[in-house]
Structure formats: structure tokens, C-alpha cells
Length: 112
Length: 115
Image (cartoon, rainbow over all chains, first blue to last red):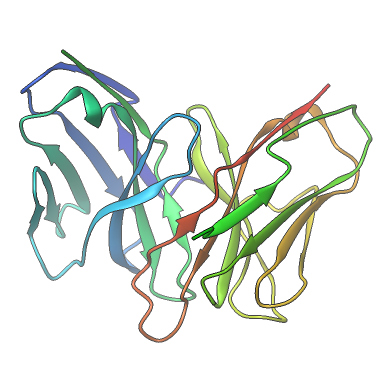
């Protein structure tokens, strides 16, 4: 069973737009929420991460918003660029054992 | 600066054949993982090894076996391949100590097709 649900499955935006990718989790025993970025033919790589005691984290054009009570978190990409076109995965780490559970992924395309 | 190296990158098997995917990391990480990636399913954990000498099942372990050969190497074996195992397989590693931040370092993947 998928404990982390991600939406949308795909997303197309124009250059300069602000794509938003949403994730929801079911298990309250998660203690760390990273986002991974994957380019075609490559493995995923860590993009940005947040802990549940923080409501927002920003790194450059990428921002994570975290709503602990709703068990939801989202990724916003400001001033998106064609080079941001990739598949994005949210994930949640179980505080027992440290396994990362991934969402289904969102394929983002930023049109020039 | 190799990081996580997987071999082979591509493989085609017939149903019932066996094969082993190899993975090695040169970052002195303690934990290693095998994931499979399928469209619409994201990355699903097959097996992981929190430290040398230990292995544990993930979300989808059926049909697979693993061996943590030493601290650097973690192999995934398909004893009798089935078409449902057609996927892209990723090996990953992490520091996995008490200061574990959750960052996984992935290889570039092994694309397996079972006919």
C-alpha cells in the first residue's frame, strides 16, 4: 500500500510559471520529508528536504510548504525554467528504521 | 568520483531465466537499497541493508533475493524472472548512521525487460 500519495501525475507550465506538486501521507510516524529530482536516464537526486517542525523551507527557486495537521506537503518552483523539466518525487522517512517511502512521481515539463 | 555504480545498464531476459544486478558504492556508506521504478508507481523499495551483514525486506520483496557482499557491494538476484519484473532498478546508498539525514545517493539505473 502506498503511504505517500503524490499529485498531479504530470504537469505542463510555461517558462516563468509556478508549478506546484502536492503530497499527502498517512503514517504519522514519518520524521523527514525530502524531494528528489530525476532527469531522463539518470537516478533521482536530492533537491530539498524539510522536517515536520518547520512549516516552510526555501532553497533558491524551490520551496517546500508543510502542513503537519493536514499531513500534506508541497513543492513550489518559482520562475520555472525549461531546465527544471524532470520527474519530481516526494518522499517520507519512517522514524523507525529510516526507510524512505516515495510518492508516485510528477513529470514536469516547462515550455519555453 | 564514481558514487554508486550499477551493472548491467540494460538486460533482456526470457521468463524463467535468472540474473543478478550488481551495485557498488565508494562513499563508505553504511546503508544500501534496491528500488524499482514503474510508471505511475514511483519508486518502491525491494530490499535494503542497514549495515554490512544485515538485510531486510521492503515493500515489494517477492521474487527477489539480495546479498550484502561487503560494505561496498549489494547485489539483487532474480531467481526466475517474470514479465511483472520488467522495470528500471535503482541501487542507492546512504550514510545511515545516527546522523542520518535521509539523503539517498542513487545509481543511474538498470533497465530490465523480461519477455
